[in-house]
Length: 164
Image 1 (cartoon, helix red, strand yellow):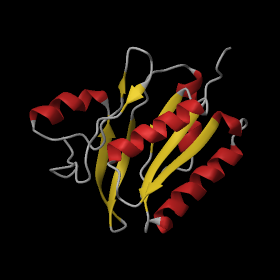
Image 2 (cartoon, one colour):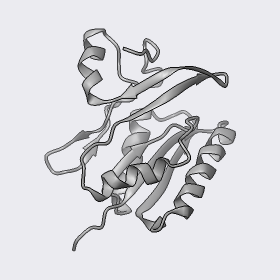
Image 3 (tube, rainbow, N blue to C red):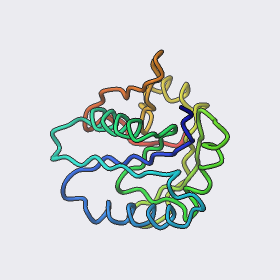
């Protein structure tokens, strides 16, 4: 059976953050509904009471997405904002059977623009040499094709995100 390309947007969250979650959920839902093929995108949320590590929640999200037929995964935090065309900009990578898309964006602090960020594999080595953990570590692909997120704990960023 041939699997059609499908993007899963994965959102880990905790209780008490419903305002943030509602905002990102509504924006992604609006974008999904406007797509020519909305079924090519699923949105999966994992909410708990802070008893799970972020790595555990990400693993559960990935398992649920793959079980639902996802071929590509994107993590979005509950308090993230995405561009109005986030899904339509990511789908060409899904349809093109790419292994990885990278992104750029803008940090805002209390609603005020702070600086740009660049999420790319080319920055990983520099971050490790400086003793920084990446903002979110990507899942590792296993030999059997499944994925496993590192079991990071809450507070995993020992030094805050920095532009390198």
